[in-house]
Length: 139
View 1 (spheres, rainbow, N blue to C red):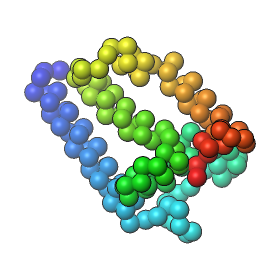
View 2 (cartoon, rainbow, N blue to C red; view 1 turned 135 degrees about the vertical axis):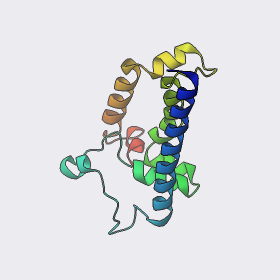
View 3 (cartoon, rainbow, N blue to C red; view 1 turned 60 degrees about the vertical axis):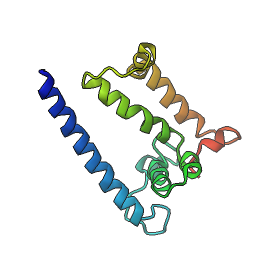
């Protein structure tokens, strides 16, 4: 891909991601997913099994973030801040931009050997009923 075309692809990607993020933030500023009768859907996995998935609490965490409450966001789902930091980095890397980040970190973040144990372990640990693991449950 030529350099100008790559820049157009990056600009289109950033514009689309920005539009989706702005729309999501707008909805989350006006709709409280914690309120009874909220139009935002809950977790279907939790609904059917009674167990928390790795994404449980993500909508409520994003709601807390758009209202400036980082502590509540981490309490709902501690993976959200991690994802908000790594996803833009990974997107830029996949578009060919080489940021000043150690290659070992990029290699780890782009590897299933990092994400599968992290998500699987988080999934299991947040469903254990005793502290400190119960603190990983949304709430």
